[in-house]
Length: 288
Image (cartoon, rainbow, N blue to C red):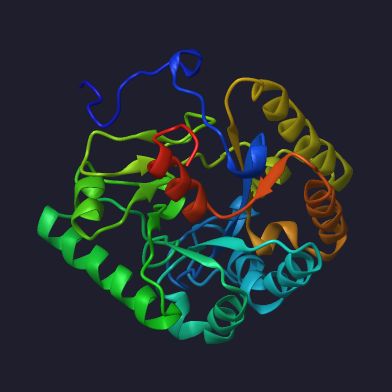
């Protein structure tokens, strides 16, 4: 079937994007704060037990994130003056309220990220999905004090109805379609697509046996190429993090090093996905 959600638009044929203060690359940290179900297979480090319920090995690996890992992330973000763009499962709000409090204190941007990361955005009627999305958005709004403006599906999943339902709920952008280095308009309501990354993503990188030092170099290479590409129009860099992966003790120092390097760049706009979407929308690609 034809894809009607967005049109083909080569990046060489668009109006230039001008970021604030002449920055060349708008960069945000996409921090996944997630809850996983005990009785449902999910993201795993060891396939041998992944189909079992319960699965202490893989569940415990994931559960390291909210118990330990995210607090290391917070220390590094604070050290380098970076606000997170949080991909938030609504189940987190009741189960890990201390993380919500920490994020509220720091002015994080909150994006809806499904109910939890064990149930994908699939296999439901339009009315069932409308009810589910409404519950997710309302739960996050009540817990954080901020209505989410953006969406990313669990494992970047959507139904064919998801974008229209998100538009009905007043959300302004999605991260699910990782096909660009710039925001662009979708053909549904007033929705934008904002770049996310399945490549500059700790789950993908470290599942391929990337070392910590290689991770730092990959972050630098990503930025430097986008900076070179931005001669005539700004670019977006998304750094996708999962605390149960990147904040393992032997990896954390490399995240801190990468964040410090990004914070030292003179032509970067270290911001949130909310602010990127807002700036783009105001200028429709030009200066705001």
